Length: 144
Image (tube, rainbow, N blue to C red; front, side):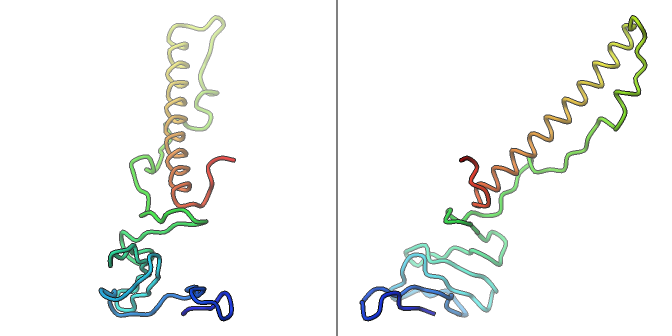
């Protein structure tokens, strides 16, 4: 559906709803950015020029973008994997430390601290991966 944006002025039409089709058009004049809803596939597609259509929503490999960013496919990667924490609640507090501490107690504390540092690094990787995905989709700006 098109809407006139300036009365009686040629070339001021704006697409407000995608055109419902059963197949992507392969001929005629189609402006870049024109949207179609392929009712056969259930996909929203955007004309990328030269009769090339990008799937925006509705299929594996579909692209999406918010707030004017270029649509991208769903971000994925090893950095988004579930983080399993190695350090348990109270693990460090539960260590026995003598006065003065023994070599074994110092090593146990060091090992527990290193395990905690590994957890922090794994969470940092996940947070940075999620931030990158959110910026790519346009859901957050990423900086001021």
